[in-house]
Amino acid sequence: MEGNGPALIALPRRLRVQDIPAAYREIEARRGEGSVVVDFGSVEEFDSSALALLGHLRACAADVRVINVPAVVDRSFRASLGGTPPAPACEGPGLDLPTRVLHSISARFLAQMRSVTRFFVLLGDEIYYTASFLRKRRGVYPGEIWNQLFFMGYKSYPITCMLVFLIGVTIALTLTGQLKLYGADIYLADIIGYGMLRELVPLMVGIILAGKVGAAVTAELSTMTVLEEVDALKTMGVVPARFLMVPRLLAMTMAVPFLVVLADAVGVAGGILVARFSLDIIPSAFIREMQTAVDLGDFLIGIVKSLVFGWAVVVASGYKGLTVGRSAGEVGRATTESVVLSISLIILIDCVFALILY
Image (cartoon, rainbow, N blue to C red; front, side, top):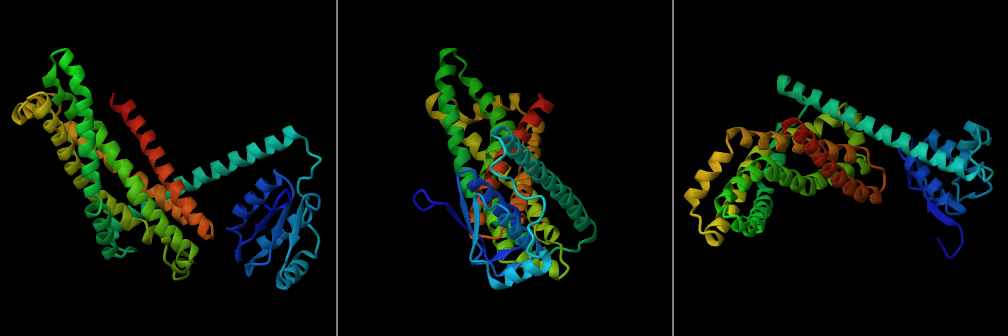
C-alpha cells in the first residue's frame, strides 16, 4: 500500500490451480479494504485456472485493476476464453453489508471444512500406508527411518529431559509449602508420581515434539513442495504421502517410548531432589510412598498418550508441509500453523483421554 492509494498485489512466478485459492483470498481480503491493483508481471508458469482468474479480475472494473499482463498470458486468455469475462461476474459494490458478511463467513466455513476433510484423508492414508509397509516392506527407504529416529529421539532427549526436570522441581516447590501446613509432607511423592507419569510427562513430551520435531518436519516438507521436489516424486510414480511420511511415523513410534521413560525418570528425580532438601524426605521413602499411588498401568497410560500425541504431531506437520502454497512466505506461515495445530490437537486428545480414563 502506498499512502492512501490502492493495494498492490504481485502474483508469483508460478500460477497454477493449486496456487489460485491463496492468491484469490489475498485479493478478496484487500478488496475489503479498498481498491486493488493486481500485477501479473512476474507470472511465467500458468494454466487455465490462471486465465480464469484473469478474466474474473477484469470483470471487477469497479475496484480491481490488472496491470503488466504478459503477452503470452493475454494471448492464451483470448484464445481460450475469447477475451470474455467468465460468468457470473464478480461481486460488485452493489451488495449490501449483511450479504457480504454472510458470503465471507460461509466462504471461511467451507474452506475450514475442506481443510478438515483433507486432514482426515491424509490421516487415513497414513494409517493404510504404514500398515502396508509393515506387511510388505515396500514403498519406503529404510535408511530414512533411522535418520528420522536419530533426529526425533537422540536429538530431542536433552531438551526434553531438561524441561521435564525443571517442571518436576517447580511443581514440587509449589506443593511443599501447602503440604507442610497440613503435615502431609510425604504425600508429595504421590502427587509427583501420579501427575508426572499420567499427565505432565506425556503432555510436555508432546508439546516439545510439536515445537521441535513438528516445526522441522513442516519446514522440510514445505520446502520440498515449493522447490517442486514433491512434484518430481509424483512424476516418478512415488506416492509422497507414503515415501515421506511413513518413515517419520515409524521413527516417532520408536522414539517416543524412550523419551517418555527418560522424562519420567528425570521428572521424578526433580521431585525427589526437592523432597530431600526441603522436606527432609530420603529418596527411598519417597519412592516407597510413590509406589503406593502409581503402578505399571499409570506408566503404560503415559506411554500410550505420548504415542498418540507424537502421531498427531507428525500427521499435522505433514499435512501443513504437503499443502503449503508455492512461495517462500508460505513456508514460514505453514511452519507456524503446524505448531499451533499440533499443540491444539494434543490438548484436544488429552481432554478425550481424560473423559475416557476418569
